Image 1 (cartoon, rainbow, N blue to C red):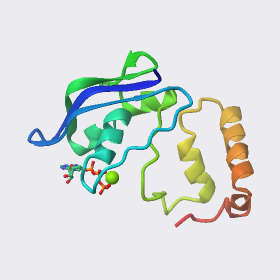
Image 2 (cartoon, helix red, strand yellow):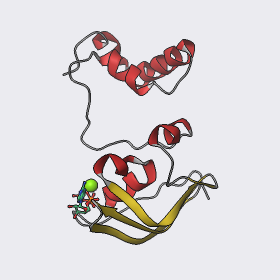
Image 3 (spheres, protein in one colour):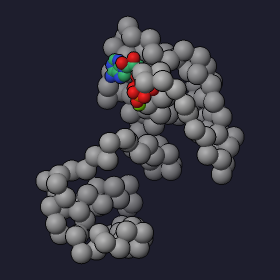
Length: 140
Ligand SMILES: Nc1ncnc2c1ncn2[C@@H]1O[C@H](COP(=O)(O)OP(=O)(O)OP(=O)(O)O)[C@@H](O)[C@H]1O
Ligand SMILES: [Mg+2]
């Protein structure tokens, strides 16, 4: 199994119990949709997986999360990104005072070499060719 949640419980600010007994499995090559009413805890589930809970004073208080066979619920988000586990946050947020290309380079921060970052930029410009002419434009 690529990703596995077992009986995950999440509490915000030490008192607000939001997730209780969430279990799910995602196999390699699979696409899984998580459905639920507003406030049901979909985003919280994703943040529990990606490690972004901590920046909101949220905590996994029981249960476990495994990615590629390793326990990850104590892992820092930046380490998970390096392992290929990335949360695409909702709301299309960008850094408005920076240029289009600078925004893309922020996303490439985990790549070590300049050559790798350049390759990544070319790949993105290949997907979205209109961005090439906008690369020096302030993105906001
Ligand atoms: N940082 C936080 N601190 C306290 N409570 C929070 C926090 N973030 C979310 N919650 C609460 O946790 C519950 C689940 O919220 P969550 O955002 O995970 O739901 P959702 O399923 O993604 O909802 P939506 O469909 O509106 O996006 C809600 O009751 C929400 O008010
Ligand atoms: Mg949500």
